[in-house]
Image (cartoon, rainbow, N blue to C red; front, side):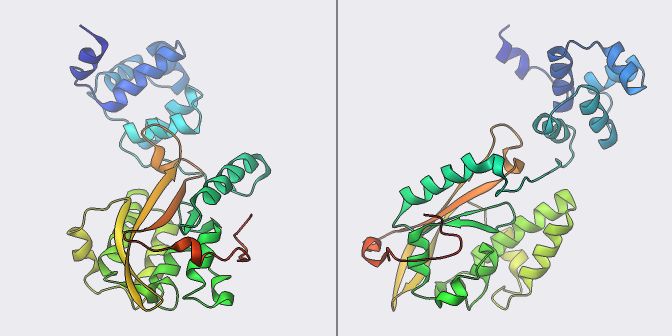
Amino acid sequence: MSNNERHKNDSNSVFSRFLRFWRSVHKVSQEELAFRLGSSPRHISRLENGSSRPSETMVMEVAEALALGKRDRNHLLLAGGYAPVSEGPDFNAPELKWLRKAMIMNLRALDPYPASVMDGAANLLMVNRGWVSFYSRVVPAEELANVRNHYDFIFDRHGAGNIVSDWEDTLSAILMSIQQAALFTGDDQAWQTLERLTAFPSVPDDWQQRAARTEPMASFRVQLNVEGALRRFFSVSTMAGALGPNAFVSEPRLTITTLYPEEDLDLASMQDDDASHPLLFY
């Protein structure tokens, strides 16, 4: 039997497979792991054959006993059915200089298409010249300079929301993704974000029902009023994160969002080479 066939026929829980894997990596017997945990070999055996489900505390203790790093601890939590622990680093920390440079190169390459980099809370970290040039045509420069959160910007009818048509379903899908994250993690910040965004007048009263009928996608079509004419765009989001099952909570969890015109629109002629913004770094 091949390894793939063996894995397909393995009916044990995901946590069981992870636990056996990490014991083998670190060459720790069931008896030794039980000793480290102050538990019994019988209990470890039951965890590995799937007849017992670990508590969240047990998962964390196993991760500590096996000296797992943040990534592997989060994999183990997910395997046990628990929310991963997110410990976001500071994007502006000296050790992430290489990442900031990489993001600048990405944004520059996307010009003249409007693009931005944001973190997991949709806080804007960087924008490109195309982004500043595009939105400065619809938002006063002094207001645009103060934009710091992508969600606030598109939910606000005085921001990007004032040029978007048929935006209700998209807003509803965004709110549902935040709602689900809040239910999954119990994170106070997610609940606060949800409360803040649902207070915007642009949010439809039936946003939960709308979102339930909409399957979320990383890319979608949107209509924007550009200089008096309704134009169609593709809004494409790309994640820059880790590999593996917990990629969606890898930190820093960055998303690059770009607008591409669906039809002919000369964005290059609209780009202002002298455009400036606090988040434009080139």
